Image (cartoon, rainbow, N blue to C red; front, side, top):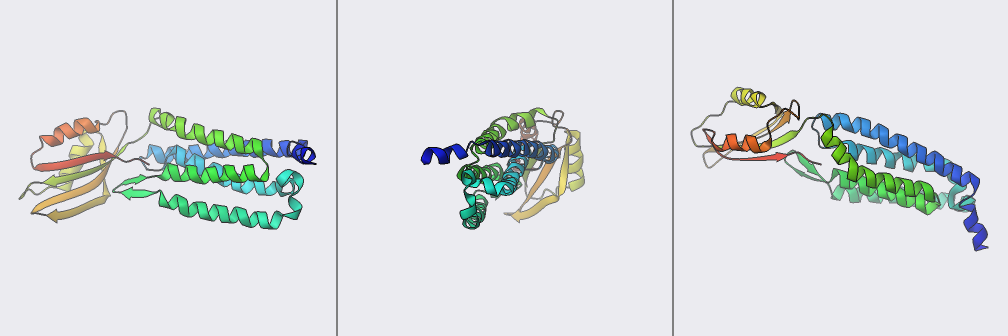
Length: 245
């Protein structure tokens, strides 16, 4: 009977599996956040939200397979092979979808958190589909809290901000990298030399590079940097954009 089948989804073994999966998800979120904070502190694009979501989704896809006999309320023995293939197809397909929302613009990499959240939501769907309803609900809740609250937490924690800067110099002006380094350090930044690209158009040199704040709370704000660049000798135009994910 239908009522008997539904009752299997909330049996003691299934509930115990949901609790175990939930504890693994919480642990994965915390460990992912820990690694992500190191990247966020260094001013990298991927931070606590992205790492936390990816770690949770990876855990969900891995741990629920250990409870295969409890899938579909304990009736998975008849469909286990085909269900595993379906899950593999979902993970592969969602991976291609996630790649499509990631865009790179200079040092900015946009869509990383969105891609991670799409992948995590696919894990929610898989958990829901095999009958681990409590674990699916917890994962969806943790994903929502990660995307809405971790960004504020990251902003309050000590860290380094990275700026994507482009400077166009007037004709005849010869910029010097060592002088640029000194001016950046005086304002609390370090020029990332390995990001420097130099182009020459209309007899004007254009420099694009990244600058990371040595300490976010003490570095000059982008607005203050813009005020100084607007009156700087030799600079005809510029752009300053915080690196985001």
